[in-house]
Each structure stands twice: as C-alpha cells, then as structure tokens.
Amino acid sequence: MKNFDYIRPETAAEARDAAARPGARLLAGGTTLVDLARAGAETPDLVVDISRLAAAEPRLGAIEALEGEGGSGGETLRLGALVTMARAEADPTLRLAAPAVAQSLALAASPQIRNMATLGGNLLQRTRCPYFRDPAAFPSCNKRAPGSGCSALGGPWKGRAALGATASCVAAYPGDLAAALVAFDAVVEIAGPEGVRDLPVAGLFLTPLDAGSAARDTGLAPGEMIEGIRLPASAAAARSTYLKIRDRASYEFATVGVAAGLDLGPDGTVRDARIALTGVAPVPLRARAAEAALLGAPLTEEAAARAGRLAFAPDPAGPDSDAPDPGAARFKLTLGPRVVARALLTLGGLA
Ligand code: FAD
Image 1 (cartoon, rainbow, N blue to C red):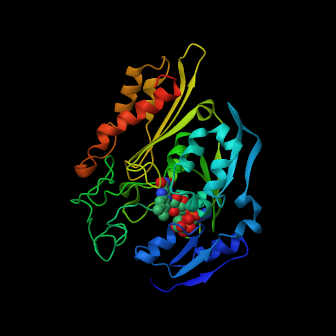
Image 2 (image 1 turned 90 degrees about the vertical axis):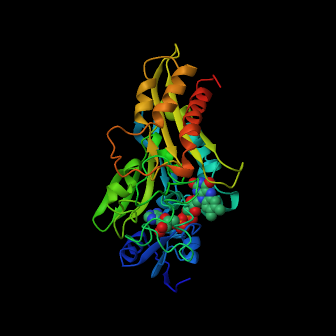
C-alpha cells in the first residue's frame, strides 16, 4: 500500500478543507476505502478520518423526523451521513416509513461491516469490478487510469452491467441502499467550498457518458462531503420492498437488486409505483417507463410482467451506439424482469 498522510479533523468545515487538497480522501467506516488502498486501486496522498466527527457535529450521526416537511404519508426523515448501516436498518421509524430502505441495508454485506460502514460511505462505494480492484493483474482500467482501456470488456465477469455499459467501462454500480433511495426520491445534502447544496440521489451518480470519463463515479467536487440524506414520506415508500437476488443468501452483492413501492387505491388501482434497480447498470437506475405503465389499473400478473420487461428494455432516448454486448451479464436481461415482477406481486399480495 502506498504511504499517505492521515488527519482526524475536529469539525466538518476542517474536514471539507482537508478533503479539497489534491489526493485527499475522506474515511468514514473505512470498509471500502481501506480495501481499495490495500489493493492499489485507490492511492490517496491524504486520508481525512471523519469516523468520529458526529461527536462534535451530532447532526452527522442523527436520524430525525423533520417537522413540517412531510410528503403525502408523513414527515421527511433525515439520516446523517455518519449513521451506520446497522443503526439505520434497525431504526423503527425508517422501517415503518420505507421498509425497502431498511431492507436494502439489512441485506447488504455482513453484520460486522454494517456496524462500521456509514450511509454516506455506502452511497459512494466503488464498483466491485474485479478488473478495477486488481491493478497488479489488470493494469488497463479506464476507471483507475483514464485512457488505459477496459480489461473487463471481453472478460467473463457476470457481475458487469447489462444495461448502459459503454466500450470504455462495463462496471456495474453495486450498492443496495442507493437503489432504494432513488426509488423514493431521496436527496443528499452536500456541503463544500461553495456552500451547501441538495442533490437528488439519482443525480449523484454519473455514467461514463455523463462524466466524459469512466473514472468519475459522482458529481461531487473536491472538498464536498455528504452530510445527510433526506427521505420524503410517501404512501409508496410505506408499502415497499427490496428484493435482492445474489449468488449466496448472505454476505454477497446483488446480481440484480430491485427496490419497489406501490400505492394502491381502495379498489386496488395503482395510484403510485416506484421501481429502481441496482447491480445491472453503471448507476442505480429508476425504471420510470415501467412505473408509468402500472398507473391507473389494478396490479395483475400480466401488468407486473410487463413492468418487468419495460424496466429492462433499453432506453429509447439513450445513446446506444457505444453499447457493448452484455456478454457474461446477458442473463440479467432475463432474470431482471422476473425480479421486478416478483417484487411488485409481493407488494400487491399476489406472489
Ligand atoms: P468508506 O470506506 O469510509 O468510504 C467509501 C468512499 O466514500 C470513500 O471514497 C470515501 O472517501 C467516501 N466517503 C465516505 N463518507 C463520505 C461522506 N460523508 N461524504 C463524501 N464522501 C464520503 N454494500 C452493499 O450495498 N451491499 C452489499 O451486499 C455489500 N457487501 C459487501 C461485502 C463486503 C465483503 C464488503 C467489504 C463490503 C460490502 N458492501 C456492500 C460495501 C459496504 O457496504 C461499503 O463498504 C460501506 O457501506 C462503505 O461505507 P464506509 O463508511 O465504510 O465507507
């Protein structure tokens, strides 16, 4: 591992100043950053340890209901960026307001990791692409060294993106939480040198095409830090689920992860539908065409199956000239629609 300097700032402002220095990386739970630094996939010059910052800045470690900021179904929940995954998954208010969000955390990683890992760090975890994570064996990786090529392109890695990949990068976004937050319109609070800004979680992540480079995963600028997540209440969030299909029953990333929520009228008509996917594309994906197709009619097996197909249909407005063959991930295009349909049927009491 490359040597680096280490500091533990006393305040969030100090942390942001330090994080703005070239080569600096924030360290929260450290469960991603340390692995990547050991592997040489991240080579920080300065590690800025924010893991104990909540003692001085309690809002970074708090879960609170924001009064007067309610959606249709209740109050907005604010989750501090340094709240651990374990604490959030067990929070009774979150479990009631958005079961899919709590489940996405409970189904991730292992209890030991969830005890250390934070919500901010979870959102910003990097791809599990084995070619990205092993620079010694695979020097070519546009995510690590822009312009060097993509070792994964012709490789047998079945975890790669089946939707939205480009010839420069086929890495899939792996996190579970982000999909659940994207489905329910959560927002991240970002503080940085230019002040504080809000960004929908869906807007945090960049595809290689958005970013102009596979190396840039998010739109965060140097010195910007996620301070919290706001999750608006909604009837669809309150009736939601997270369905994770993976190779092992625990301690495994999603092959396909689906966050879904439904608001059903008294006669069973779908009034609101939310669907977001992870593990299948470079970023967590909201399946808006699938959601729209469900509205205004009762949920049936046919409707759920159609929504599943739409969720995995290529975006007609998206650029596809650069799209490589999904290769070893092709099976996700068959599996994924079924996972979406099953999540919806579970919510509708039809599974
Ligand atoms: P860190 O490692 O401290 O940081 C991660 C990144 O985020 C770094 O780049 C850091 O600079 C940045 N960062 C951290 N906090 C902030 C902030 N507040 N503002 C700006 N930048 C910040 N995840 C899943 O979703 N599902 C799984 O099934 C899953 N399985 C796993 C299995 C294993 C074996 C391991 C090791 C990890 C797994 N993970 C899984 C990933 C795990 O959830 C993440 O490692 C963890 O959530 C990262 O949080 P952290 O606080 O430790 O982040």
